[in-house]
Length: 231
Image (cartoon, rainbow, N blue to C red; front, side):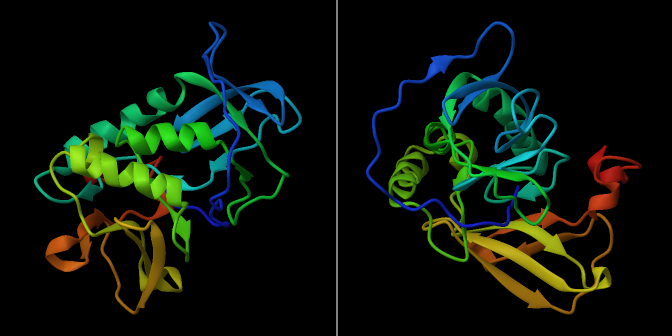
């Protein structure tokens, strides 16, 4: 899922000691306080306790594939195969209690922006996520982990290592046509503006032979009244 906000900058980090998820359910250490969470996919969750209880979250620095349906495709992968990885990513993210911080800032969708360096490193290193920087290159340490995952063909890189990944599609019929594309090398995301009108369930490809494809489904029918391509 793509997000609106600034990429976490590469800085020297202290050693983090992460703990297994408690039997009571997934949790994180937010600004030093343990709070319960419910992971919705591999890069976002909702707070179940604490000062931000009920708020949705977008994690910074990385992106996992959309889990609302089989919409991504590249290399030798089928959309269904990548969808299975996307669906399983939330369980990989929920494996441990991660140390996280936030200043309460929100993205364009009203989600609290949270930085959990440990989970970003974990998800990128096992190939369940790719580096994501909003209009700038991603964090250097994450780029190095992604390079290793690509070389080892882990997770989403097993059947293809695209030079660019399309992460969101917006038809001109929505008022503004634009697609967001992320570099498979640096994590830098860019926007391609266009005047194209997409049909529901139309596959759109970006980046030519070294790129990737995504199926267009407007947000309002991704979770309710789903079209056939999401069923």
